[in-house]
Image (cartoon, rainbow, N blue to C red; front, side, top):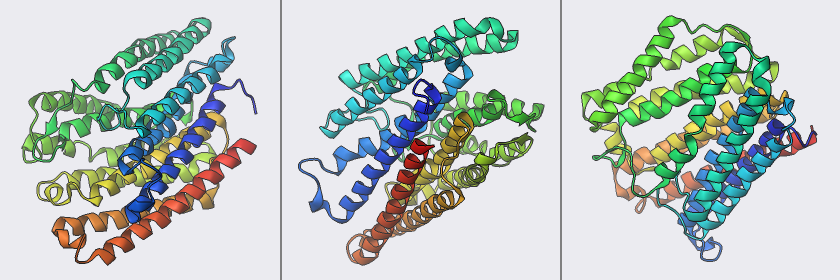
Length: 406
């Protein structure tokens, strides 16, 4: 294995963080069954940030970092050895943050728990990565076509704002608009965050030279632009899930459940991506449709603060995001992430967990007796959740071992 290949290093670290995040998730599911088993003074609340952020900033983010290195051809310059250095700096910052989170030092903002030294460590890792992309751009831009050169430069300018955005977003003084009736994000906020993912899905096959032209015609790109305008307007207005403009923001997502598969059908994908691509498109459609339905008045009020929202989070991360990230790694490294059987096992376990949690959440919304009078059903659900988590943890470990040997 080439130790100076930044994309390979990103894949190895991403899989390591997936295993770590799944291990913490397994511990959390056990603590829900046996709270008295908590290790020392580290309670459930101390472990939660490690689980969430290991999955987001480790497993989810590092494949995107590897993708950036591929786009800017870091491995084709004399700075290639700095690619793995950036990955190690990223992992070191995340490890420092995990230590602080476990000891209760957090900003209190979900997915933005960075604070003090961990925040500045992560910002420095972001700056190092940007600097490596910049010098690689300078070294390679003379060989690129004019359009690619301009787009890459624009990308660098946009990425330069990320460290500043992270500092602002993690600050306790800033907070995005919320739906005051639920305490959660508005429909427009959900639209905006999903549009970023849609942009990545539209960009992926085009940016890494997958054969084909895709089927996203002019109408798709116009609708993408209109969706961003709707997001900007409705986000400025605010409101709740009882307001028509916030419901309308969520409805803007429904066409993408069809538009993305339609566009991707116009490309010829590497064979190694096939099981993950099928899984990703399934989870994508389920994520969009269920998300729109869950935001509806009556349904959201019934399931808020229940296991149903935990189910939707796992649908998004363990289902869709894992499939998307695994597919990216398959393309970048030209290696398989798991075989057809392990991919199927992961997705069946994920679907089973999501179904169990969703059923529990709906029952919780009917009344508190689910937690007290009929506690046996709740315990059964938690045991099934732990069993599914154990299957997912074991599967992710097999992927990490397989990749390290390839």
